[in-house]
Image 1 (cartoon, rainbow, N blue to C red):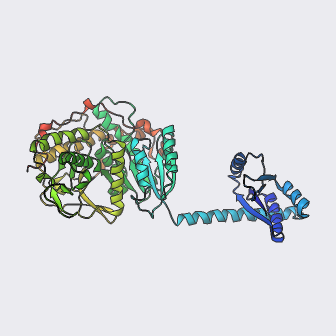
Image 2: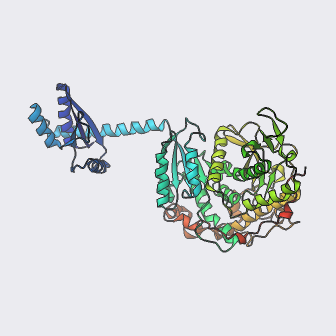
Image 3: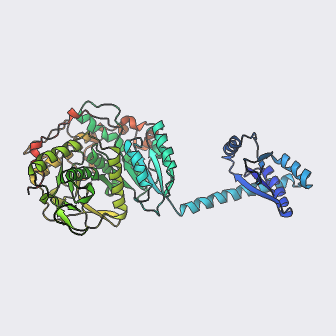
Length: 547
C-alpha cells in the first residue's frame, strides 16, 4: 500500500496539477492512496514551516508531497514538490500529466473558493455550539490558579456547557504563561480553549461572564483617600469596555477583599446597561464566619447554613446569626439529615460571641486584608454556580447588590444582603421575618460605603471615620447619587477630576487612546494597614443577637 500526502496553497496551480495526477493514480491503481490538504494563502508559509521543522525537512514552495510509511511507522519520507511527484509517477507507474496552464489556473481558482467555503462551513458548525466566553481580569492574581480548575470541572456551568477562558492582564509574564499551560494540561472536558489577552481594545469581546479579581499590589499608596480614588480609572475603563464589547447578557462578578462594594458601584456607574447583572461576592466573608463558628462548636463549616452578611463586604459589616442553623451537629439530640438547630442556642458563651468572634471577623474583613487564593476562588465559583443553577432550596445566600430601599438600606448603595438564586437570577429575601436591623448598626454599616463613593467621585476630600450620631445619608443627601444615570450632568467636575481619559482625549477618540494605555499601571495599590483604623471592638457589642 502506497499512501501519499499532497499539501499545498489553496490557490496554487501546481497543487491543482499534482491533484489531478494523484486522483488519476488513485482511481486506476488499487494500492495507491492520496490524502489532500489545502491551506489558505495567508497561513500557508507558516503551516509549511511548522511541518518542515517538525519532520526536519527542507522545502519552500507549494505543493509539498511526502509518502507515509504505513508498514514501518515513523515521520514519513519527503518526496518533494510537483516536479518530483511527476517524475515519481512516470518512473514507477508510467503515467504523466497533460494539464494545460489555462486549466491549471481555473482549477486553482476553484480550489481556493472550495477551501474558503469549507472554512466558513466549519466555523458555522462551531457556532452551533458556542462556548461560554469567560474573562478573568488580573489573571496573575493567586485566585486565578484556584479558580480555573473549578470553572472547568463542569460543576459551575454544567457538564453540557463548553467554556472558553480568556486570561486578561497587563502583560504576559512567565507566571501567566505557566497558568495557561497548566490549564491546558488539565484536559478538562468542558474547556474549549484558554488564551491570554493583554490588549485593552480587545477586552471582554462577546464576554458572557466577567470575573473581576483583586488588583495587583506592587507598591504602596500614601493615604486611604488616594487608594480609594485610584479605583476609579480602572473601573471606568472596565465599565466602558464591558459596555462596548461584552455580550448584552453578560454577568459580572466582583470578588476579592479590596473595596469590593465600591468597585461594584463604580462598574454599575460606568456600565449602566448591564448594572442589574453586576454583583459583589460575599461568600468569602460568610465562609470565614462559618469556619469561626465551626471551630467553636467543634463541627464542620459545611454544616452551618443561613449566616447573613450585611453591609460592606470589605469594611464595616454585620454578621447576622439570627437565622443561622447547624446540621448534623453531634449532641444528645439527633435527627434526620434535614434536622437542624439554631446556632445561637448552641453557643452558650455570649462573651465569646460578642467580643472574640466579632474581633476575629473584624480583623479578617478590614480593608486591605486579602483572601487567600483558595477561598476567593471557591467563593466566586460558588456564586456563579448558584447564579446559573440556583441556590439550594430554602438556603439563604449573602450577595452584594444595588439597594432599592429594602430593609431600610439607603437606595443606590451596593450592600450585602440576603438573597436566593433561581431561574438564572437572584431575588432579595425581603419576606424574612425578625431580621430588622438596629438603626445605629445600619448607620455604621452605610457610613463607609457612602464615604468611599463620595471620596472616589471627588465630592469629599477626606474619609471621615464613623462618629455615633452622624447619618451620612442625610448629611450628604444633596450630593449622594441614588441613581447614577445623570450623575455626569449634575457633577461634571467630579467626573473629570480623577479620570485620566476625559482630560486626555475627546470622547470620539477614546477608542484609539485606550489601546495605548498600559492600564494596570493605574491599578490601585496596597495600603499600609495603619492607614485604616477599624472601629473598636466595643462598638460592635450589639453586632450579634443576644440569646
